Image (tube, one colour):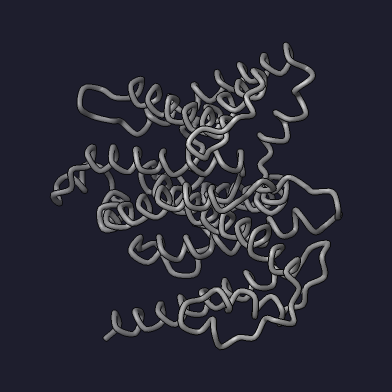
Length: 350
């Protein structure tokens, strides 16, 4: 009976968050330099929906407004939603694997690897596209995956993957790559602004090609991670306990590490480094729904989507026509929360 009540409570809360996500999406679509009303935006979005789209009359809405909503603002909102969901799910899984509340999606140095790859592409001057993707994006993705491979091989001991060694390897490689990025900027001062802006995170160049490229990485990776939710619950009790209960701990770690790395690499290659999303959202959602990953993972995805859409909307509307890197906005929210976690943990120790 208690489980049934909890299940009903979670279902209601999940539906409410979906409604919030829907209205925030529409509201975000209305905001910008072009003044488009909420009702017009809603009509434009509904007219593209199957079955019910023909019921909405959009003949009195200008083609320019349709273009702004459907081809400029909407892909940016979808990209923000995907990135927020992906980073939040990875943050949730990493906090379980490392048993560390401060773990985030970039703890293995993936962001530094991606940033180095992008920096190299910027310095070389690659502006072309390959298979529909910008060369900078491809270099960023390759740098992130190469970093994951290096960290994994440094950390593994035989067939095992010790958590502490993995964490230390990630931190060490991250510092090394950050130093290389600094050297790249020192010797290529004319590209410093472009490199810095990329590393601060931005979704200003979002388009439907990026949406179609990013969606399968985030969606498939998140679904598979969700299938290991029960294993993550047991791993919180300790590797030895989880092993005694029949969980192949090291196998699960490898699978989640690979999937998480692919999700983070794909997100960072599109948007640059956007901090704190994968750190603060899992904690906020954990306070709302508890530590069960069967509930925590889908709710974190929703929470991350909402947070990223709000942050990106603020980034492009606070000081028009200029734009603030979205990573700066998420850091403004995330840094105080991070400090709060440190103070809270300090009190527990005392």
